[in-house]
Length: 224
Image (tube, rainbow, N blue to C red):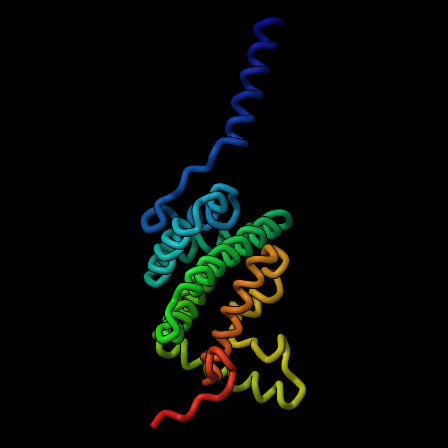
């Protein structure tokens, strides 16, 4: 009986270790793509990494997704098909926290950007952020940065026209899927300070794409 009791305790200990042990970080460029997505979207270990490290890993994921092999596609499809219930809630939590923390990092840095460099910073941020969100969603687009910016400006023009006709959503600032996500799903995960910083940068980004002065919101004169 004593031997059986010891075996049971050891079994419980091993089981608890397997359940609660830290999940090792995969190689984002070399390991199976489903393992990479599992770590990114379904573990707290990813959430606990410094935002700079998460950004670096997401950069590697963007790179990986650009040249995704047929094998990667099959594994990613299987991963997506196996998601259900609590896993979906965990994915929403991880993606929301990633988006909030990354956006807040950009917003903090934006506060120190000289006025003359803010327009370029906003456009660079938009490009990097949308690429990251597409990669996390498993649907990256092979689109040049210039075309991404042109799309954002066209969408901003449509939003402004809708606003004038009384049909705009999100106060006429819905100039991209990533920002719809930021204003809806992510909003509840951000602290008051993050919402203030992030909201100011989003306002300025909307002004940039509308061709408005970042400080005043007034229309800029057309280029000569």
